[in-house]
Length: 72
Image (cartoon, rainbow, N blue to C red; front, side):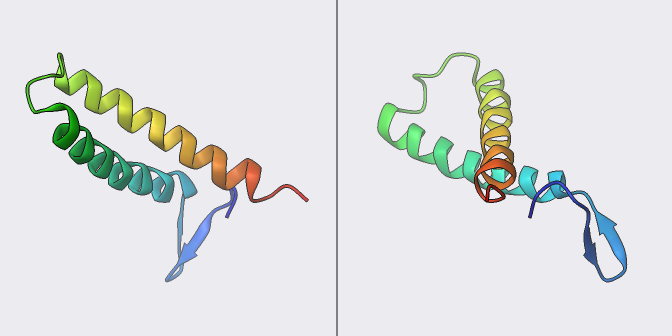
């Protein structure tokens, strides 16, 4: 997919939107798994944790789709 625009019905979308949605879904899955394993009250500053986990997983998704899939 790379970092080029994606045409959907004549509208160009940024690939970062797709990567952010994938990162959001991965964040929800990872957070649910973590709460099931660790417990609900074990995490301090839960909102900061959620935001940082979203940023990390979105960056990882972007890295995977841009670097690893487009290398010759």
